[in-house]
Length: 349
Image (cartoon, rainbow, N blue to C red):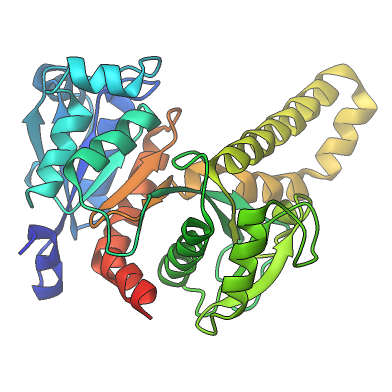
């Protein structure tokens, strides 16, 4: 039995953290784990990386030593490295070691804020694909303008955003099932709406794989499939789960991130430039705070890599401590709900 399922019997869930690979180095990951050790008694943090760097960071933050352990890994894959080359040259890198620890049952889930390709490849080397899954999918959580149905949060999911560049109709159908299951469990949305991303809402719009996936999804009564959505529907929240191949999804994700950063920079420019603009921004401050709360990716921590028999949460490379802690909470929630099993059941049905 994998150790983390002991939480169902009153024990704790162990989350392995790749400490070394993020943009900010070990300190922010350690701080996030330290926060968890104080505020989440059901989570045990297994910090994987260079022991000296981890111990030095732990010495600078308040934490509960009973809920944190360290596993030494002498190397790490840097952000700019090619994933295959990095993992081949560094078999004892922190991400590779952390993935093996999860596969062997020493931890229940993996939070990886470092090199995305290396994290997915390390998982592929150590984890198994869920029966019925041909390719794993990297999902991204993004803010939407409106809440839909009985959703308890303003976020929606888009997948794939980079793990599978070219998706077959079977892949797209699988992504739809996995995304719907994740939204149901993590967002507590009992009937998430699912849509295909295309260049038109008509069933025959889009490339052949999208048209065929539309036909298949339309006959699946287990899903609340609402058809196609165009790109404009993504930030509007037209669907709770938007399905596409990894190439299109990655382009969309980078565009959404760029738009958000541009809006924030324009607001800063306006504040610095003119007194009347500063007054106007002050009058809109409550609304701006609401927008910041919705678009702050740190509050949801990370994005799931779906399709493996173990839980993997890919945290943003720029994650600070709060985002790391929230990624750990999401990972623990997915473990407690046995997300891989739920996906397998959804695919069987």
